[in-house]
Image (cartoon, rainbow, N blue to C red; front, side, top):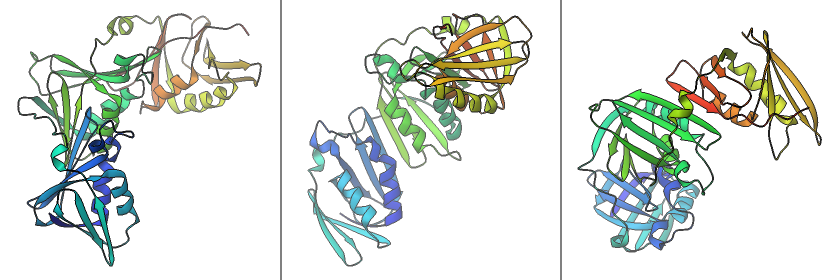
Length: 366
């Protein structure tokens, strides 16, 4: 195998797939890239056996072939090189000679035959979406996914396909984000696919706004292909909790909130919450929203903003950081908040097909 590629192209290619390589590989070969030189392109593959990705770029291929090289050390070397072009030559499958200007290196690899093959997608159901749209759907939901391993099924984003729609949901039990879009699939096709958060993060990184994404669906895997990159992930197993009942709950009171102003006030008032139990009291008064926080170790804070509310006083407590997360993942100038009382969740919506739910906290007496 022999190829020549620009250092910038090679760096960008590796950067796209580097995060898929496991930190502590259970099998030594998984800490490597599979590098394949074929026709006029160079193909890099990385996998951790749950998430796998393949990326191809044009390169000057002088001799076809393939080999496996340690990803971290190879990437570090490429970043340190200063010559514009890099030449890689391999006479066998376990040693590569790397040339850049007057520099010469020999890097040990492993037998490429040991590298796990990525799954075949020939039988998969597929549909397409603009890459920017898919990225936005994942962005609006992934932030709410649980980071706790003991809630395994909640550590991924649910993609539910039904009635010609793709519905995306993320929740950790304390907040929920849901959005949806129409897709070019038969209304008869349905299924639920729970995507691991690692896969979702990597998909969002690979998607460019000016491209088209193809989504492949099988019983136990989902793949996304866009531009010169494809990512394939195994799905999380288990039954996703029924979230429709929470969403269906009716809010008795609705109001419009200026998003940027509320973000500013929540960032201020959150400084006066307790580190162990973040809680801010939302007091809705005629024409005004009053936010208060009281912490014995820190002090107290009060901020307010005008709102289009005309009813009786309502008080409810929310985690300000969860509320901020929701506001940051909406792009509108204003959001609509619906509440019923101190004990039922708040429901936020904007002009998109997105809906966010935040559970209330215990309302402490001042």
